[in-house]
Length: 326
Image 1 (cartoon, rainbow, N blue to C red):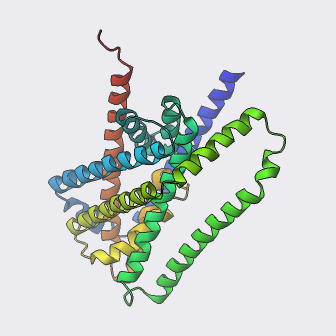
Image 2: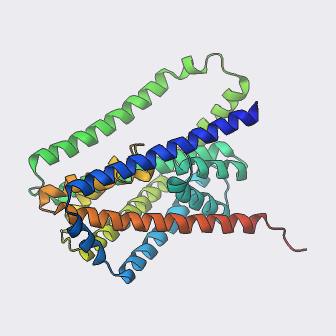
Image 3: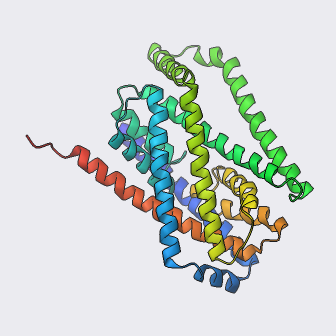
């Protein structure tokens, strides 16, 4: 029975990833239908191979910092993960985001690996939640910075939509927090002692990491730096495609597009991110084909980076599982 249940779960996972890739292809196909294909193709051809390789190297280096940040946060919660293990978890999650069947994304693989290797699994879960929260906070901060840097350049309607989006995001987070507090006792009623103990460990890990504001602040700073690096690399690719926009415009549009890609509609947000960028940059006079070209090349960087991360995770796992010489 357990084997049949696992097979059913795996089948459902593959169905989810297939549907998400199909959704991504449909969104990209719609964009290609409404935008001039020749101009798009010519823009992509302008990107030198050396520029792509340099951007890919910068992307991977930023994720190296990301793995250090993730380890710092989960260990602040008490996970006690060493560098090779945390790097394996992080790289495996980066690969899984694009290529493995998962309902939630790469966090499932990252957590599964970390839970098995940590003496305190609840700390891995709590630290990962805190790390994700800091990433979203970094994105919101970049949107706010973009609004500050473009006080008179952002169209009123677009500024209003961005502000509404931030308000809605904050409201949803607040409602979720209040609901969790109010529904805590009804949800716990009738639960097993084992479940209550695990929940108590999770709560303790969350309190542990929350009592280290200096670690959280450093994690937010690192997360902001990582996202700024991705933003700058995307703008660099856009210049190669022939799209010249002030960097402050990217500070406004890029994080909003990435926040839109969080919606679990397509695999890794592919297609949604490009469509959002086209919509957000068009009021600033950015031609749609050039924006889409830059977005597609950036997706190429993400896919290549995910493949490299998968190889790194495999090599780290193989190295840790190989017998040590006497």
